[in-house]
Length: 464
Image 1 (cartoon, rainbow, N blue to C red):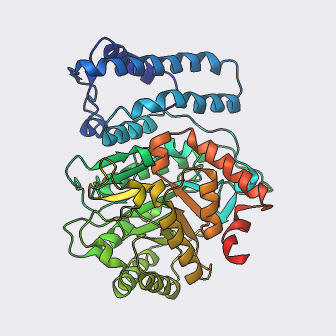
Image 2: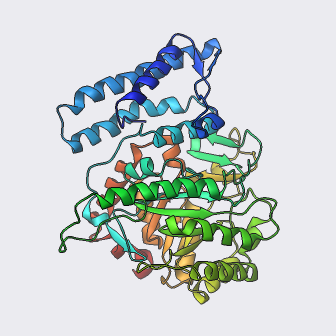
Image 3: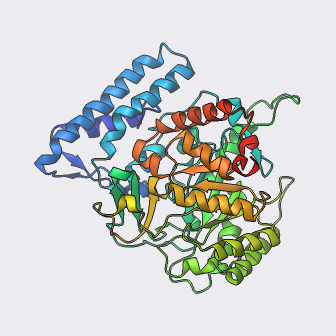
């Protein structure tokens, strides 16, 4: 990943990498990263086979830091931002040398500590849109599952995502399934995971989001107010981008609705939108909540909990439901009917799949249990998206998620009916440099086909 700041943290990182280059290693344990008082850099003896790539990591990151420091003094912010994303290309391959979950944790740690590029270049005007009364600088978001515990919201939004969705967050902390629980299918740009809603719980997440919210309010109070004739500020409660909070239930909970209601009561004040996750394949019985009666009863209770709270002029956060791609036509019809009847604010389509498309059969790890994400999911999730757009007659905003790895992929989701799109697996593989590329490619697709805005292209396949 790229360079985001200088100072004491670089000195600490430099010391860490110098020891690594001499043959030492450091343990990035999740508990050490989560606990400020713990020392996440306790030395351990590495196998000799790891020394070569550790030296490579040292040279690459230190080279980026030194080069970045020299470059900052002679360049404007936009040029620095461009260089930082390019520099991230040098570091990102190192992450693949780690086990998938360790790489994931390290990426979160880096984003939380400002060790990622920060996008200062404006997005193309054609990408700007308004949904639920909220202004998005672009329609490209980061899906839930990456920043489960809201540890790195500021750093991830700073990368240039139009929105970031944290979670899934469960009421009570839980470990999730035993490791190993994440597997790369690199040949097909795919991942299988069976995390199982590992979560620090809503109290920890609320503390982080509350601290960030307070920090932002303080900054706004000391800043000069914008002119009355200026355009509305892009972004939401988290600052420069829109923040979604994805809610889950605890594995042992017998009252799913109570879990989701608790999440709404605790976290909705910090969210620009909320998502009820009833589609993860890794929590036993969860997908049964997608049945017509079960879903209708659940949504009614969650909506009531949200609406009984006091809200300002902006009103309550929109409520969405995230569904699976492995649903029958009847299931989709039932979900659409419930969404329309209860005036749900949107649907996220889709979660991971328990199926194994032909493209992954025979690959190492393809027979692991869990949800499959990445390129092999693209067609299946887009077909479900297209069906749901027709079933809801285009009256409910849809977020297209599953297999997006290019601007063309995002564009096809939008034409199929998505108002917004989300990434995860491609970001895990390619890192920060893929984001400006996808946004530029998406803008080019829109302009190529004569669309003046993203909104104009939503559902275009159904109108021709």
